[in-house]
Amino acid sequence: MPDLALTLNGEARAVPAGTTIGALVAQYNLSPQAILVELNGEALPRSEWPARAVIEGDRIEFIRVVAGG
Image 1 (cartoon, rainbow, N blue to C red):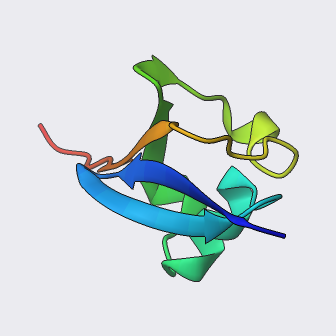
Image 2 (tube, rainbow, N blue to C red; image 1 turned 135 degrees about the vertical axis):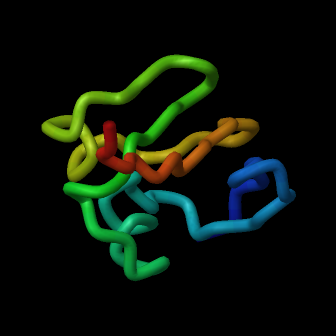
């Protein structure tokens, strides 16, 4: 399968077609409980990560969530 071009945290990346958001989270060793995924400017519910395959041109941001007060 060909690679897809997308933007991940502001940097151009190429990933294999069929890659899911969940796979990207795992690839970068991110704790799912500690991040928010923004896909094309919209927050993506965690329940959708395993099935949501990226497409050409997607803009993905991994945002660390920190608690504090």
